[in-house]
Image 1 (cartoon, rainbow, N blue to C red):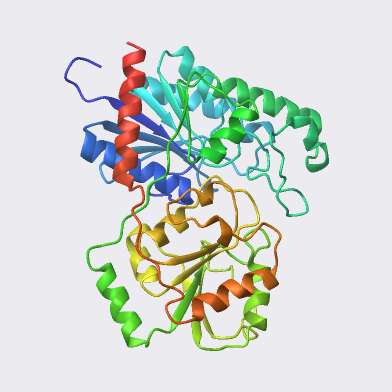
Image 2 (cartoon, helix red, strand yellow; image 1 turned 180 degrees about the vertical axis):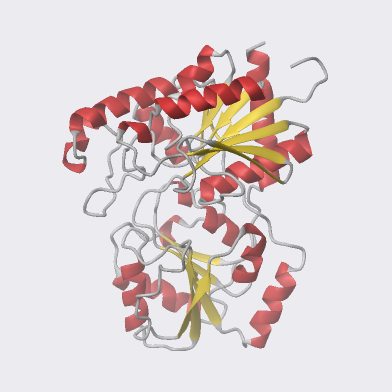
Length: 410
């Protein structure tokens, strides 16, 4: 990079526009767009897809929002090791790295792309920042969810305790060693919460430097609160609940279902968001026993979220595991929506938290029901909007981090 030239950052994430999927991808895209638009960075992306009709490891060049994205087509059948360290992907990324010639690399979720790219990038002398979003670096199951569908609970995570959860302990131990060695090559590792940072550090995931880099959210549009107020006035203050977690135990759906089957009221609405790609989450779920008026709401994009949030007054967040962050919680709180939530790790690190109101993981419908009844009382769902980190705030932090890394490597 010559004096006065905009830094060129290469963003690597398993998915990237136009193949967007998952919260971490949203963060990667939104921050990348703002690094370009608000901080003058040149931005290029590398990501992956899996298309049967294309040859394995062929590269497709796409562009969206002014960011060129080199998409590597992965074959459907890959072995265990290739999911975290794929030499063929590393070879493709190395060729692209030489072509793109970035000043710095910002990696997000590299599962399927593989952590093998990190030693290669280090050999090329390019500084790098690694942003973790989940527990993929500590747990081959990615979310620290045991085989029985319950949260692992290790703190710190010790690979010797994973024997009962994995098919082949020796290969799991090899994976753990390879990933921690790769992560240590990063100039900076970022974590989305204090909880994620501290657990990872205690578990041996280290680099030259680490920092908490809280995820941003899309702020409400200028007319959001007007639309929200109009809906509330039109319904006479009838409370509406929203749930975006899907019909699984780990997201707390069985507790939510039982609570709304046993409540002795009908004067409320409920919306269940189908976050699946094919609309299948709720297709086989019987909602007839639920009290109130419930309906399924289709998957929505970042640009469409205000339409959903304007419909609800209370977000149900009954996660049964310790998550690294709570994106939907921040989206709701920024829009003056009450949140009923569990004590689920990084999801609790926000200004509206009331520790005494948190449900504990494992507490069932009998503990959830009083919270539901309380918000159905007059003004029970009242919640003032709170200020949360925006994507612009997050991009500003990352711009400073990248510039510092570049300075340190000069």
